[in-house]
Every structure is written in structure tokens, then in C-alpha cells.
Image (cartoon, rainbow, N blue to C red; front, side, top):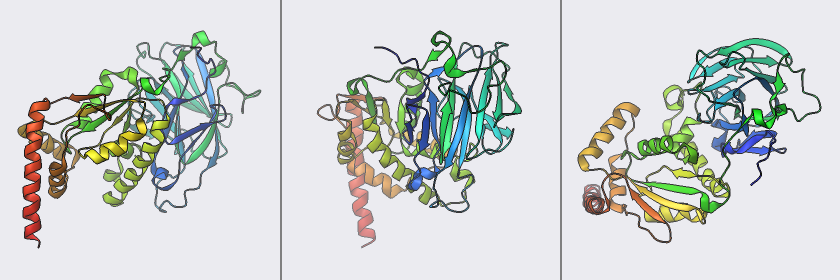
Length: 404
């Protein structure tokens, strides 16, 4: 299959809440309802590991988010920079990920510091990357004016290429990788617009699966705190070539961060209300995901058979697998306590009992081509789940009797 040599914004390495138009040169995040709280990331289709290159980003407009509360911090902001292929779409929040934001902050590894000038709708930011020393040096220009050195790496990136990367919040942008007859502003001396580099001097991003049959959808199945998210994190690290896109409320909460911090720790809003917004966004993601050829992991409890049917039906044609996480009682209690201590998260006992009562193990058939057990095997898991069903039924009846 021929590979397009044009450098554009990737429809594959991007968040589901980002719409890419203009032949891959414009991007706009969704803003309705809870989406207005979310960041949306997108990388370019090519990266680079040598030379002196740059690209331009024009902030076209701030989108209408009048439905946000008046105390929402920085409702319109963009982060612009570079990241390695291995880095997530949350620009500037982990290793090999570097971003300059419109609040006049530069960040990497989730650490933010003052840098440059604020910028917003109508401004053009030029992001420059200099590999001359073998170590990446980053600097930026605003509307044709140099605003200073942003970052100098102390280490060569061990062969890692860096990709142009945008992180958007309620702002529409256009990019110039070199397709325009004239750049928005003169290219800084010694630099080349990224897309003007010979293809041989660039590094191509991974290609999306060609058909839905090549796409995995893994559905996690297990009680809250059983270890599903830990398995997902480990599995994604072990299979980076899959580029799994995780569907779950925890990931959406990560996309609602303010200055790299999760909102429940630094935002004056009821947790229940914010969680509901994240859940609404997740339902919309369920509608979008089956239309995109990608590998997905659905990280929720999914213990109800009816819920599994409803969620998996739209993924007809994908390679559908269930991943069942049922640890022993002792291990489950240990994981629950660890989760409570580290994340301050716990579920109401009544909710757990209801899930135990209705827990049904998935099986191979029309819904799943395969079922993977990662703790107890099927036989031992079935015995424990049968005990859960009995426990949930008995204690539910007892609770009902108490409150009659």
C-alpha cells in the first residue's frame, strides 16, 4: 500500500473528540456539554530526528462554551510542541513530550513553569526544533517575534524522533507544515518548515489498521478495584504497536486535567457532577469509536451480560475479545485497599453487592471470538462468581427486609 508523503495532522494518532478537516491541516475539538472540559490531542503523520525544523499554528477562533461555569479556569487554550511516538496525546505531561501553552507555561513530564507570552485566537505560534547538537533544543516565536529558548534536553533521545503535537481545549486551529505558498510569518533563519523536508529525512507514524477485521476491541470484565486498569496499563506497554485507545471514565478524567492535575484534587466542583459529565462523554465516544479503524480497550466493569451486548454490538466486524479479571478473595481485598489508599476511591457496598448478584462470566460465541482469564482460570473464576451471585442475592434480600 502506498504511503502518503504529505505531512498532515493524523486521524489515527488523535483523540476521538478532535475533528480534523481541511485535508489534515485544521483541527477542532468537540465542545458540547462535558466535552468543553476535555483536552483533545493530535500528532502529525511524520516526525523528525535531525536537522532544524519548524511548523506554524494559527489559532483560528475560540469556540462557544457559554455553558461552562464562569469559574472554569482557562476555557480556551492550546498547547503546542513535540513528542515522541511513545508519548500519549496529553502533550507535556510525560517523558519525551514538550508543550508550550497559551497561559505562558512550558511543560514536560507534567511539570509546568513560566515561559514566553500568553496567546489566543488570531495569534500564530511557530514551534522550532533544533537537533544540531544531537540533543533537541526547542524554541518558539509568536506572530513573527522570538520569545526565547524553551527547553534544551540534557540527553540525546536515544534514537527517538519527535512529532509535531497539538493539545486543544475549545479552540480551532490551522497548521502550516509548508503547504502554504507563503508562511504566516517569515521562517526563522536556518530552519525549514517541517513538510518541506525530503521524505527520507522524516519518520512516518504507524499506519492505522486497513480493515475493521484487523482492529481489536478488548472488553475488560471484573468488579471495581479488581485490577482491570492495572492490566490495561501493562498490556498497552507490552504492545505499543497496537496503539490501544482506552475507553473509560478514568481516561476521560485525565483529559479534564487543569495544569496537569486531576480535577477532583484541585477543582471546586462536586465529584458526582464531574463524573457524570465524564460518563456522558464516554457514551459519545462509544458512538464514535466503531467508525474509526483503531484498536480499543473498554475499561469498565462490564459484569452485566446485557451491558456487554449493548456496548459490543456496534463493533461488529472488529476482533472482539473479553478480558476477565477475577482474583482470589484475599487478593481482591488487597487490591481494594491499595486503591483506597493510593487513589482515595471506593464503591458503595450496595453497588458492589448488586454487581456481584448480576455478575455473569462471558463466553466465546457471537459476541466474543475469545475470552482471556488473567487471574483465576475459568473454572475457579466460575466457582467464585457463583458464590458472588449467592452472596449478592442473600444480602440484597436482607437489606430489603431491613428497610421495609
